[in-house]
Amino acid sequence: MPNQIEKFSLALIFLKNLTTYMQQELANIIDTATKNAQAVSQLSATHQFDLATAYEIQKLSISRRMERGEQLIGYKLGFTSRAKMEQMGVHEVIWGRLTDAMQIENGGALDFNKFIHPRAEPEIAFRVNRKIDSVIDMDNILDYITAVAPAIEIIDSRYERFKFSLEDVVADNCSSSAFVLGAWQEPQTSVQDLAITLKIKEATKQSGNSNAILGNPLVALVELSKMIVKYGEVIEAGAIVLAGAATSAEYIHQGDQVEAVFQDLGSVKLQVE
Ligand code: OOG
Ligand code: MG
Image (cartoon, rainbow, N blue to C red; front, side):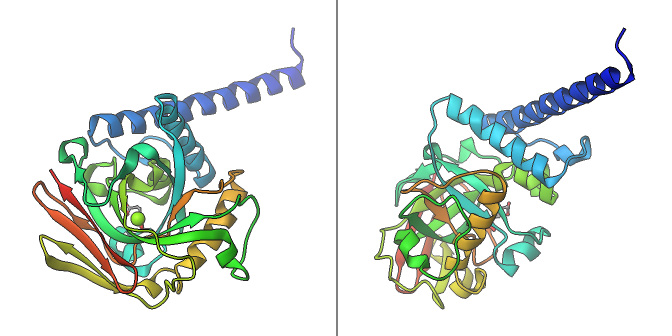
């Protein structure tokens, strides 16, 4: 017969396993919703979980994509601008993972049918120069990047009506679904105080300034380093980092040509088909 202490530890093991099982189940729900382009209810409507667990669920759902052959090629930040925080009602900087299957070539096509309710937002991308496995700061920040590029991110929340809590959106890989990069520019190219416009069918839908991203988009890399260190992740040399949108996101539809134009950085576009 197990004694009290043994019973207690057995109960703890059982609870922990149940939790891991539950996390995997929730990761599967997100992964299936993504694959089938079928929205689901917010996970937080039926399960209570904290932010650390949300990041675990994100990791598990990306692992499923990687088991199907996708490669991890970078990271994205979310809610690095007030415009985005206010649009979505989430006020904390978050991070997600980018895989090769999410990348569309500049000027390429986005297959609308593979998405639920996609939105486009203008972003700035960095290519990482060397492994980041500790917290970095703004001193020597340029040593950590080899290039900068204009970008468009396509976000597609797997949740009905694009509504979520902080934990929901983190578990859903921060709505990441696709991205396009423009031509890479020299790392010294200033990313501060750049005018940005997002155009759909040549009409300007959003305009903003790169300083809306944490005061300086390079700060996003510093913030990412803090978060990945906390969650035991390492950024490899060559990784792409999306700094987060400077403006609100815009819904896109079949037939749209979507273009983001950046002062000094150039432009980037995609076609919705
Ligand atoms: C979450 C992702 C936010 C950004 O650039 O701020 C994000 C969402 O808005 O669905 O990618
Ligand atoms: Mg974004």
